[in-house]
Image 1 (cartoon, rainbow, N blue to C red):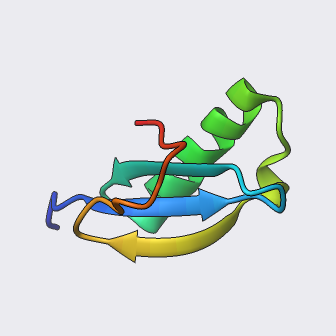
Image 2: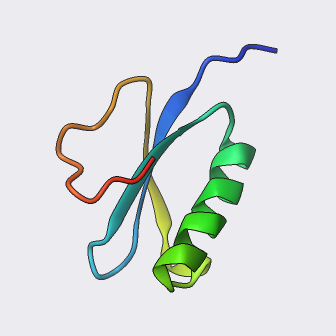
Length: 64
């Protein structure tokens, strides 16, 4: 199994975007849950918007 990390971007309906690196979609979903809890937002509100091997330069509200 490869340890290559991709960038995963999620956005909620209000436009809050979180972006971070993870080795798999499963890991990304766990990280998204933790970040959403820290932000006080339901994890269900965040939709996956992008998976990339490069950081999305247009993401202003990124956490890692």
